[in-house]
Picture (cartoon, rainbow, N blue to C red):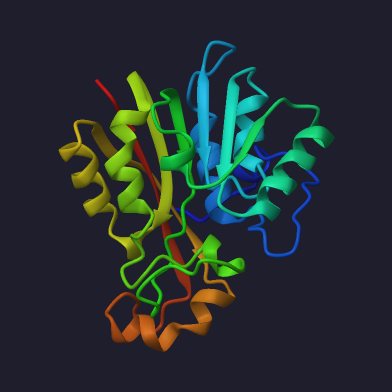
Length: 229
């Protein structure tokens, strides 16, 4: 399990607009972009990016010619993704709202998601503010579990889900839940990234819950790939 390297960074669009309160591309974004680069996409591929933020991953998919829908609960994120699509000269359909509600009944060949996954002392994820992009309840799984529950219905046969999240959020549980939902699933990538200010700010709480070692300075990130038979 190696640290993230420069080739991974190079897979993302350059000079993205990140409005205040919108999650900027970070190590988890880069790792997921690298996983996406290993998939086969073309003009016949329908892609959904859940929690698009700046639109970085959606734009990576759009560069292949794929038809891409991006969705986010943040209006600022929707605006940022639209602006970045214009600047990059790529076509995206960007939607505001909850993915399960806005896209009910739709099916895709690929789903990408970098969901909120940081464990938080809050019982429920925040309904507004920048922390919506990372806080995900005491176990970090408030959004992850919803994606696991809905992925099968949103994927066409042969469709693929690519998800990134922290090892603190129990990737083995994600794999189990996806398999229970009828998908084949496994961890296909791992990397370490330095702790950012959010994790450093709640170090004592994370250690108290047994989610981090006393001397932890790096976070383990995982890529989970699931496919509908």
